[in-house]
Length: 128
Image 1 (cartoon, rainbow, N blue to C red):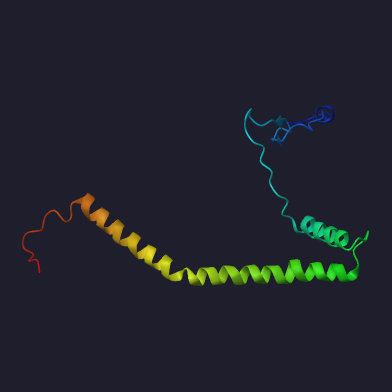
Image 2 (cartoon, rainbow, N blue to C red; image 1 turned 180 degrees about the vertical axis):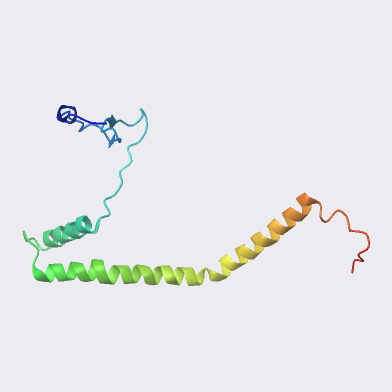
């Protein structure tokens, strides 16, 4: 669809979402607006720099503050998060393996009962 510039001059500031036609979509009555956090690195990094500068009561972050934020947000926190996730997954290995084995046994028993395989024994085969 071709849109004329006049169609886009309308103020949609009270709208939440804009669909493919560039028409506003307002939330249903009674629904809560969903706020999706900004996860882009640049936005998060700039906010961390501003917070660090505000903590030290300066207008612009210094080189030391930039290095501190880089070390914390780029090096230290991802390392700690990956370490903790790995430790959690290693510690959950045995319970997850037990749950998998239990599920396999239950599915096998369910299949056997539903299919009737345990109801009769084929003639010619001796049971042990």
